[in-house]
Length: 431
Image (cartoon, rainbow, N blue to C red):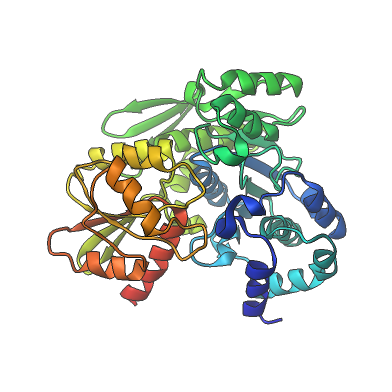
C-alpha cells in the first residue's frame, strides 16, 4: 500500500477512539500483548518513562522530552491524539516517524490484524515500540492514552512512572468518582518502580498510596517536593538544584504544575542513573519545548491577519478552570471564542464553567464524535449564553472570526480535535 492507503486502512478498518469514542476502547491488554509477541517484544528493548494523568500529561511528556534532548539524548516520544499528521504520535525529538516505517509496519502486522482485529490505538502503540527499539533510543517517554490500568501502553516496564493529577474526564469508561478514576490512573504504578505524582490532593492520595504500598514503592509528590518562588523570575527549587525561568516562559499559570512534575522526573531519572544534572539543560528544555519536540495545541499563539489566535485544548472541568485563570492573568477580557466539543462526554458542567462575558461562536470538528450544533446549541444557551453565531464547518467559523472587526484575539477551545483541525486550517490560511 501507499502511505495514504495505509492511513486509510488504519482509520477505516480499525476502531479509532478519537473518531467513534468508547466503542473503540478495549478493556484488556490481550491484543497489545499479542502484537508485542508478534514483533518479538520491542517494548523491552529500550528504557522508558510512563506518563499518565487526567490533565497535563502531554505537556509534562514534552517538557521532560525536551530536557533530555538538551542533555544530548536520543528521545522517543509517544503521545496521542495527533493534531494534524498521524506521525505526530511517534517522534524522536521533533522528527516524526517516517512514512516508510508506517507502511512497512502495517504490512508486516496485517496477518495478525486480520486474525485479532486490534484497535487503531493498540496497533499504533506497538508501532511506536517497534520504532523506538529499531532506532535504539536512549529513553522513550510513553504517554498513556486513556486511564492507565487497561491502557495499551501499560505493557512496558518503565524506569519511572509519572501521574500528573486526577480530575473528572471520560467517566463513562473510568468511573463516576475521583477515587474510581484514580484507581485506573494508579494502574501504571508497578512493583519496585519509582513513582512521581504531580499534584497532591486529599481526594485521591490514598488511592495512590495504597497501590504504591502494594508495589513496594513510595511516591514522590512534585507539588510538595519542588518549591516555587515568584520574584523577577520564577525559581523552581529541588534540594540544592535551582532552575530560574523568565515569567513569560512559565505562562500560562497551569504549566507551572507540569514544569514541576517534569523537573522532578528529570532530576530523579538522571540521579538514579548516575548522570550529571545541569540546570541549564532544564531551563533550555522548557524554553525550547516546541523546537525540540514540535508540541502544539496547549496555549499555542499564532498571528494570522493581524489577529492573535490562541489554540488551547482545554476540554474538561479542570482544564476550563485553568483556562479561565490564564485568560485572567493575561488580561484577555474581550475576545471571540470558537467552541466545540465531543458528544460522548458530560459537557454540561464544562459549558457552565465558561466565562459568560465573552463572545462565542459554536462549531464542530469533522469527526463522528463531534457534538452537532443542534445538540450543542440548546445546552450552550441554557448553561452559558446565546452565541453570536454557529457554523458547523470550522473553516467557515475561522474565516468569520478572522474578518471580525470587533475582536483582535481569538480562542479555539473545547476539544483537542477542534484545535487540531483549526491548526491545519490556519496553516493553510497563512500559506
